[in-house]
Image (cartoon, rainbow, N blue to C red):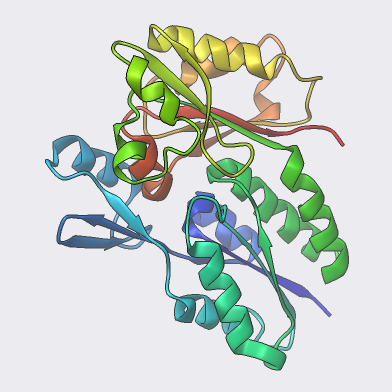
Length: 278
């Protein structure tokens, strides 16, 4: 029996990826004060960053209600297919809890599996696409769950930020808290590889931050694929140029960081994501 895949909008999948892989995406909500927007429905990434740049109110995010996941799961499993929901890290959002609650509400009506990606943006999205590819090839739900869960500890996501203010304001600063006292004219670098925000480094300039990302990537053995993630920033091409001595264009994908992660990463967020070898 086929397997269907569900995720949330923190995966930063494009409409083309969603359609090509028959994935159902449950959107989170973005708030600017009293204004509320549904991610990917009411607000595109570029519109979000433009609004964040001009707004006096810092954006906040809200997890989908369990009912939104239940609707998506029931639609995905309408023909009796098993449903696998792969979601934004439980260490950063209540989204995973909403998916679990939806699965419990469905009970025995459908076979629903929920996986904590322990990741964000491309780190999550690459898992979702891999699960969809396996499903399209006829893999069983057990095999898909096994492979995706094996990717969780091998997923690395590093982000170069211009500020920690968004993380601080939204309560997601986690292990990067210690950086706050020393960040005058410093560009912070965070590691989200464990599903929570931790300090990775700090540099004096943006250019040095991007070089740091390159150097961290080059510590790994050569990988099959690397994702460059950016919040509509104009310097992601610099990252691609920096890693080009080792990674050709067909080994690199470009992911636009959407409003969910952008609300916490702030203007100018950019980074790298990859799966380390087993």
